[in-house]
Length: 261
Image (cartoon, rainbow, N blue to C red; front, side, top):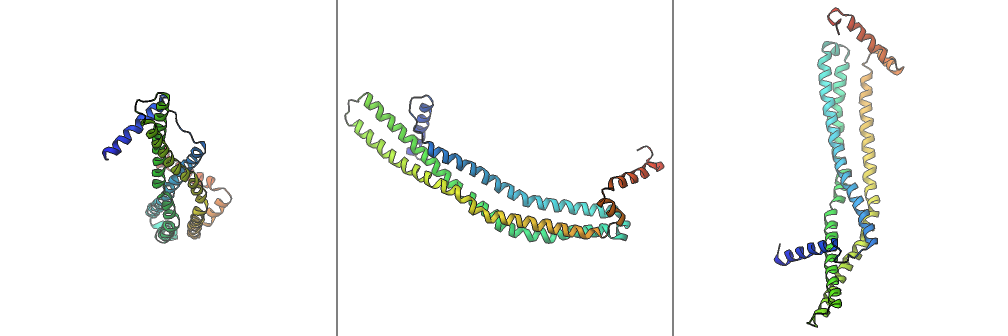
């Protein structure tokens, strides 16, 4: 930071302290403040959307990886019994296909249609925040110079050139501040309104990708059902599976080696 920049930073910090102490009157622009608050709400929502959208893809990968581990464990648990009726092998194959084909097929389209557009939208925020920061700094400069003019009017200085020079500086600061303020006040609402048409295609793509994943997952799991015992499927459909499980548990309890369980 240059010496001039350092002096500006110190002067602005001093102005803020004096404002808090009530020694300098703060310029308030309610209309701008409303738009900046609306922008902050949108910014937070968009950043959160970017984070959660990435988390969704990570969660799909984690889920299928977990399914793979479960399938491998079940296949090992069933052993020869699973090999005879094909149920554990079929389940393992369905999970492998879901992981190898569906997830990998959805990865590219999801990044292109959902993650990247959201990231590009969020990439504008640093530049906008820089404009907001610059506007706020120029407002501090203007308020400080306005206060300086006020003091010179109330208590004239021996140097008669000080007041007109201060008035000129205050006017220049006002024009710079108002130009930035007007620009943000005009463009922030436009940006906020553009969020809907911009994100609509990504939202539609997200729904379609989720639908495809759920449909393919259902289709693959439905294929496994043909290997399940017919009585088990029927009891599940009729809501009687709990009693079947309890029956098997009772048979386990009746075994002499498990009688103390």
